[in-house]
Amino acid sequence: AGSGAPHGTSLPPFFSRRFGLHQGHTVPIRFGARLTGKVGRQDIGLLSVGTDDVGELGLDAAWYNVARVRRDLGGRADLGGIVTDSRRDGERSTTLGLDAAWYLTETLYLGGYWATVDEGSGADRPAAYNAVLDLTTDPFGFMFGFSNVDVGFDPDLGYVQRDGDRRSDASLRYSFRPGRWGVRRVSLRTFNTWHDSLRADVRESGDNRLSCELELESGDQLSVGVGHTSERLFEPFELDDGLTFAAGTYSWNAAELE
Image 1 (cartoon, rainbow, N blue to C red):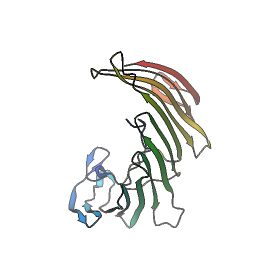
Image 2 (tube, rainbow, N blue to C red):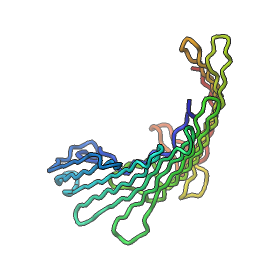
Image 3 (cartoon, one colour):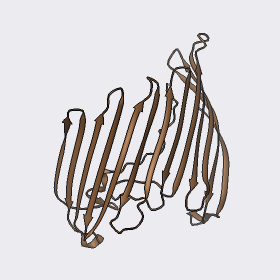
């Protein structure tokens, strides 16, 4: 019954598959320890892993540490923090993150996060942040989200789909219940996502959709939608040996029935 849109960009500062694998190759783990539990209102997690060097992959022995704390503030609100630290061959990368979630009412959610990476070089510390406001009621729903990922933001133990990206999300929903014709509920939705390149300072892509969804008393569902998508290529993209897309902006429309 929610707005039906994601809460902004997923940006995990810790991605466990970083351990023991490198480009599809196995990396031996020398030792590992994990501690999880609850102390009062705090959920706590600690992890320490050491990996061996792999000469043929050019990997040095490394030591990884992760600490995560989340405090229940009551009233469906919580505040959390995470620190990840990796060390190899005299170099280190430390990520610090904060996140919060708060239900302002039973149906209105506010959340966000902030994270930064310190490489120990004294250079600027790239950061990433996000905020989202989501309303979920039976007749109405909306979601407004905003996220920013600085150029060069790359947590060593995290996973970033694209840096140098500013994303905006907006979704609206209106639902009503006819009470006849075997229709339980009708929902009208719009989903909108825009990506702006921080490197080029231009709109990089956009996705805008409208849909109408019918939920029948029998449990069957029917959905019809239309959408417009645009994508900018900053350099030629070779899809196949005989197919290369030139740099430029491409757009297309689509319709779907489900």
